[in-house]
Length: 498
Image (cartoon, rainbow, N blue to C red; front, side, top):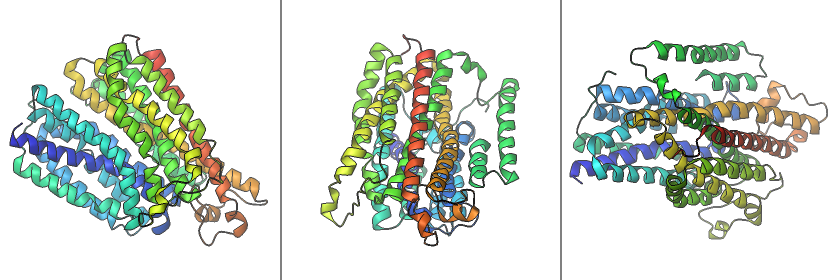
């Protein structure tokens, strides 16, 4: 491996790590963000949802376009621009004065991140060949898995010991190192070939009980854009997404199941992070550590199940994996509102030992979930790559990557509606005479979060039970998405599909 190749790996691993890290670290910071930042336009849960989903939505929407621009205008150049923009937007996120400003900055951060993931893979593809390329992809993938594993734990420690702002500011030195490595050591390359309104509208409308016409305008724009896109792609001489790829039944099926399964992943992970901190009282560090067991299973077992899928075909693993994740979500839906919190503090060694409630209420489901995820992930990638000609492997991967990020946004909108509706209905059932549609109530008592100090005492006394009901609804929706994904794979993936 040459000096330029080593530095290319350093730059691409660091850049991609920051993108993946920001999708997991911020999860455990959301409860503190909701409590610390003032807000006037959005509600607490609404703002938390935008902070998480806005980043992924802008990232996923531009992945394919960013890949095309990277190939056309220079991989090194666009990669460096993405790094600079990601570092700058991370700094601004860390200094955000309000929840609304943070939402806008997270969208900008996602736009910058969209140039780093395809840019990383493009630089590796251009800089490596033969067996070295496979090894480079393996190192890159391992770093991505490690980031996903450690992200929540690192984020939790930062939030508890420093501030939620540190979860964003930590990106700055990483981006600077990657930028320096790219500038000094990575050669330029380019190709000689020519070159999300649904979720926002739904969340915005539900928060305001569908009394604001802006929500309907946004939804209409989303529907129109979605309806027009396939006709444009069919007529364009060089479409970003050639519709001919979807003539492959397996390719279409894998992308449908990806949309469903990754939507379930958001519904389960995002709402769990909010519930354990905002409702049960877990510290951010504890909320991060509770995801470690499932992450360990994913990291250790994924290569083994990838090998088995190559031997026996991907279909059985694409059915069994999501069904095990369904079982885990059903177990999560049984967690009681009285579950005792794990109040881990890095400066108190005795708090490192989790309470019995975690071992009973969360650990078994987490292990089952991690096993199901490990069974599914590598076979899903193998089936995707086998469903298209080798010449289209890169494009197919980009499309599936984008779908895996669009699914959570659509699912997040549906789950937001369900969580909000169940929470306020449950609260109204417990407090006689309470108006669940009152704007004052929704501002003072957000779902899955602590009520504000101004909330009436008789209402605040029942928030924990209502949030538990809302969390259970989110877990059941996630379970339904996993079942639908397993069913799609059972129907559309051939028994011989590798």
